[in-house]
Length: 133
Image (tube, rainbow, N blue to C red; front, side, top):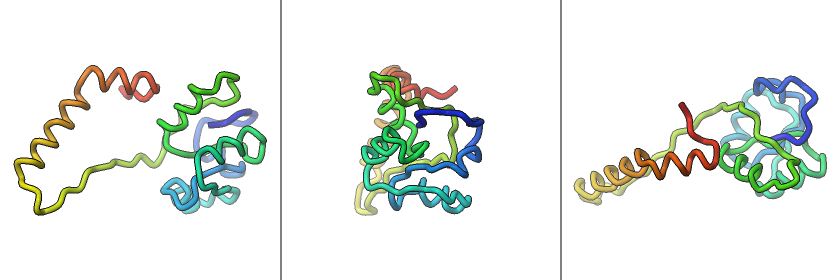
């Protein structure tokens, strides 16, 4: 998310020399540090990142796309925008205890599949501009 763009923002590399807010000890912070982003500013919360962006302490915020898009949607003054740049995609999963019966694991998996294949799920993703082709 950025508030004023006066540089080429077509790739993540455009932000290497910019002050970028991240959540402290996050996967995003580690990812950007490993790619030699030198001007990262770590904050405890996303709200602290948003305030730093609003007051000009940083020039961008790098965080989970759904949360950034949510902040952008709540921004009635149009101070922020979320750029169409994605990187470091992460897949999440549920871990089950080995003691959990296989039938329960299968039931949970099937219910999750029903949800993510449903129209309601697609509508929800669309509301946050997260529907991917």
